[in-house]
Amino acid sequence: MATSTSEAVAVEGREPWDVERIREDFPVLRQTVHGKPLVYLDNAATAQKPLAVIDAERNFYLRDNANVHRGVHALSERATRAYEEVRTKVQRLLNAREAREIVFVRGTTEAINLVAATYGRKNVQAGDEILISAMEHHSNIVPWQMLCEEKGARLRVAPINDRGELMLDEYEKLLGSRVKLVAVTHVSNVLGTINPLPEIVALAHQRGIPVLVDGAQAAPHLKVDVQQIDCDFYAFSSHKVFGPTGIGALYGKARLLEAMPPYQGGGDMISSVTFEKTLYNVIPYKFEAGTPNIAATIGLGAAIDYLERIGLERIARQERELLVYATESLSRIPGLRIIGTAREKAAVISFVMDGIHPHDIGTVLDQEGVAIRTGHHCAQPLMEWFGIPATARASFAFYNTQEEVETLVRSIEKVKEIFQ
Ligand SMILES: *Cc1c(COP(=O)(O)O)cnc(C)c1O
Image (tube, rainbow, N blue to C red):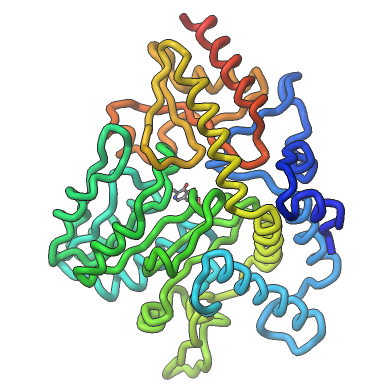
């Protein structure tokens, strides 16, 4: 296969963390931008891909390309087997009970839209409520707004405190009898806040309310266990877990998925079709109409293998060190304010600077080779909450280094020289 044995040896086991060795797996990191070494700190927008992922996609097209679930010929069987193996890998990644609880979708956005369009349409009526939090990504706001508009239901928003933590007591007060679903992020893409999901889920379940979790920012950084969280739905995107774009997964408890109507109609989601009546396929295929992004799915499988070889616990530990170091370093810069200081945080740092627009920060940093994100980060209501139009955001991955944090700090000092 694509993965060389040297790579597996370098990252396997409990040997010392060798970030330079890991960076060799990511050719894109080895380049200069505006004459400076690239410092990629926009991992919350999309993560870079290791060679193992790039090779897995390429090898699929070189050797195995065929449609899945249809042909009886060798290539189709090979493609189907590889494709379905990835479902088992996702099951393992999330610790789902069964592989049929994993539905392949385009990404987190589509996963949430799928639940809104199927579970939501079936179960939400006029006067009902959907409860989200103040720190949601637009992907976990707009589908619910659309559903509420269609049904005459109401979107409620659980507040957060100044540190950017969900206020659990306020959340609990909002869990009234009209609430039909809670939709909440695992990790905030702006604040880095890690939400206390077991508590959030338990409070909702005490009242019989199901919970959907937006896991887009958690899956790349934390060991996720949907059985331990006990959430009803969990969504993530491949491209943020070092896999290809165009694929992701929705976990749903089998009992719920089985009771849900299909999402899109077409090939693969049926068991029989006549012009009078169509019988739908079993889960998860009932939700997977049409030819999927097969190569990207294979790539996602390679990304999961890669992550598991390194170990998500080790990744979380390394990123925690980077977060602490970067937080301390940035906090020492006068006039810089970090937005999002939750006690439980992933390696995402949003900040603003006195008198300097975030876009100017981003532009100067780019000249220094440092890639960060500036803007509202698809969370405009959250920006409003903090009373700011935008932030600059540095988001880390396990391949980032302490030296890169130092380059970030030096570049921010340049920003100050230019604008103050
Ligand atoms: C990126 C992101 C999404 C959307 O993911 P897509 O891959 O664009 O569908 C949703 N929620 C959060 C928290 C995100 O970071």
